[in-house]
Image 1 (tube, rainbow, N blue to C red):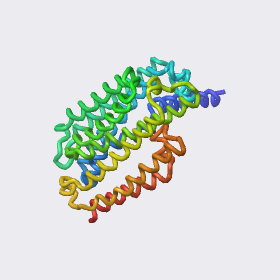
Image 2 (tube, helix red, strand yellow):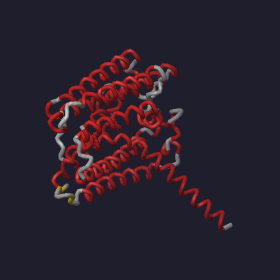
Image 3 (cartoon, one colour):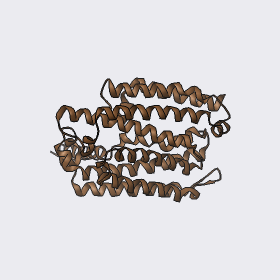
Image 4 (cartoon, rainbow, N blue to C red):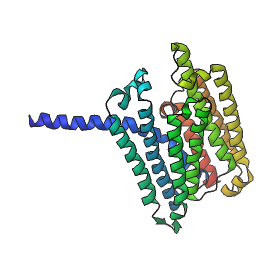
Length: 318
């Protein structure tokens, strides 16, 4: 009897933890690697202070993003209950109560601020993180407030919704830049916005396909999109993203910083990555979750790894 009670207790804990993880979406933390981009592109992977500051900002963004996911599911609970897939989300299914969801959201905010505060109290190799603390804190708080507005209202407006999402990734990039003191090229900022705008439009295409198949719009703003518009938007943003990347690799300030003019060679991987995602979006019609695609598509993973290795080889060994 005692063993049965113990097993039941641990099963309940495991089940609750599973629902909590589904609510805060740790798999989506992959998006926050944009915080690490300034360190990577700045050729500072061997600098301990830069790596530490980047990781602190990364973790702070992970927790604040989870707080946003909690708020999003709270706001969308009624719509999620009518959705064939989203009805299984923890709040919509009743696995986690509204009160508990608000509590978890508050905990994520506290963890984000606590991570940032404690992390930036350290001094590594003579670099004092206090100098950039307020800048990174301001960006994270602005990101949080912007996404609360997005969840509550802004996501109802077509084009505005994808622009807010893309700007959120620019904020991640800026947080990484301020945290490390690395000055960002205007081309990398523009490329980040355009790349994530491209991914957002591709995701909206999945909603349009579902709407045409079922006759019901997954989102309120889906009726303001159609396949013709989405396809053109994807083509435009992908093309300009590639141009921005090329301009980044050949820009004088970047060449002077990394001491090489061979970065343009990595353009081939970026082109392959964009083409592969367009193939998945248009041919396979599986663009609904970019993060899931990144974790499952072997072709994309190989391209990303080869791009990263080539980039590192050019920066550190040429």
